[in-house]
Amino acid sequence: MIRRLTQLALLLLALDATLCQAEEESQEVTESRWRLGAAFGYGVRTNPLVQSDDIPIIVDVDIAWFGDHWFFDNGDLGLTFADSDALTASLVGRVNSDRVFFGNSDSRFVVFDLAGTALAEAVEFEVPDRDYAIELGVEMLTDGPWGALQLSAFHDVSGTHEGFELYADYSYGWRDQRLYIEPSIGASYKSADLNNYYWGVTDDEANVVVPPYEAGAGLNWHARLMVGYQLSRHWGLSLVTEYDRINDEAAASPIVKERDVLGYFAGVAYRF
Amino acid sequence: MRLLVTLALLLPALVLAEDQAGDDIRLTVKPVLCITDNRNPSCDMSFLVVWQSDNTGYYCLFNDFIDAPARCWSEERAGRLSDDRIVTESFSYWMTSSDPDSRLAEVTVEVLRMDSDDRRRRRRTRHVWDIN
Image 1: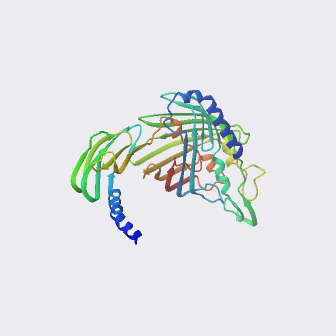
Image 2 (image 1 turned 180 degrees about the vertical axis):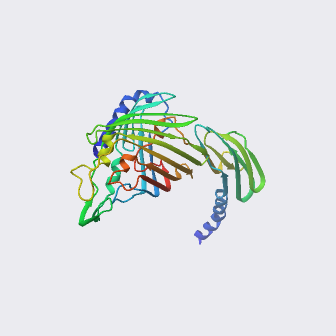
Image 3 (image 1 turned 135 degrees about the vertical axis):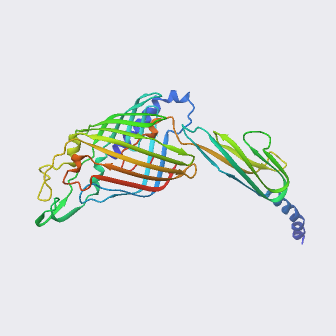
């Protein structure tokens, strides 16, 4: 899938370059279309799933390309169809982010079920696997002296969860020369189909350890604080903390142990 | 013997060349980085320019804003200047001796624009981590 996405990205880059060649020739390009960087440090994002490990963050790679219409931003592919002083609107394809937690679960022998009741004998249990979903949606960006707002609506187009997500994020940044501070808050509405696919337990998956569970729609909340200090043109220090509160329906799932997902990262970042 | 005589004759010339080429000046400027964004499109800064040389002499400090020297020092081997400026683009300070075309030391003050006119560069992705 990654290879396909990469091939698609390269195709889009070539297409965009062809479409915009004439336009580019008449414009002075003052900003590189590429945004390349990497951050090295240490961070963790907690995993809300039972019997799962937190997600370590050692290196964060930033690869993005922004054409006049098409863009590629760390796995997201976009086509901008409206851009004005007030608003930028794009059609975006992406991979769902809920799947990431399911990659760090373990298989263990347990003697209690997930409700804490003793079992007659040890049973091997593993959190049910989930697939990545390809989602397509519309994203709107707007900003001003009041801050920046990002709104999006995505629907599954891969037949994985067949649900949708509505997302909103508001941020406001302060800069004092090298120091930059940006808090942000937001919410994400997840449809019942999406929520149930990732956080529900089907009858086939249920056993003596985990009962079946059907999740309905729910609203996630998140808050984030980013602090950056620019050391030089290319090097900077980054400190990020993030809090996600999983919606009630997902949090009530027997495969969820924590409804709060906490994350932090501190390190040095290099931007080319 | 002839070789020794030749070396003896050339030695003063070699030493003289080293002195001329090695008119070693250390030039420091603080700060050397100015960061701008959409809300603060320029930097109102006070630059402290400090220079020091191994040799006493005539030295001038130039910058990119004017053709004339910002200041000259005669029979000095060190000096400093406080320069208040509002800057929007990268520029340089440099030192010369009596020949204004020969730059003995140069320091560039970089203006780094952190914001982009392209909103998409500020979009938040939903990765495991995103520190853009």
